[in-house]
Image (cartoon, rainbow, N blue to C red; front, side, top):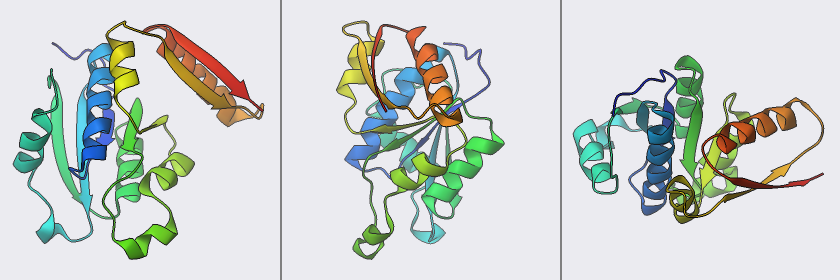
Length: 177
């Protein structure tokens, strides 16, 4: 499939099962949007990081249509790297898994997903389970979305993004204040 949208979907991966689920969702959304998919692995110890080829090989086992897929291994903290790349590349969406690999001592500082979701300047999707997204993208069921609203700019941006999702398929929205 030819990619016609230059704004990439960026997905963080640490090659865990959880990040594999996030990658499946990111790929499905990129495919629907005809957007490039950029997988990013960040490592604070570059010598221990997998190569781009190792990441590509591990990820391709889970993807049906990897058209437009690029992989980058970047030095740095995952949350900082993902946010920086999302800004630089004017990402359409940033996708991360709800849990990833992290040393136990770092758990007290919060998760990568939490830090990214709190500070990302682009829409961020935190994936726990890929099944609802796959069923939605394939037209099997509506996507159910809960959005917290406070009548501010962030809420407005979230609702605009949901409107964009509705162009791809049925979305049931519940809002809480």
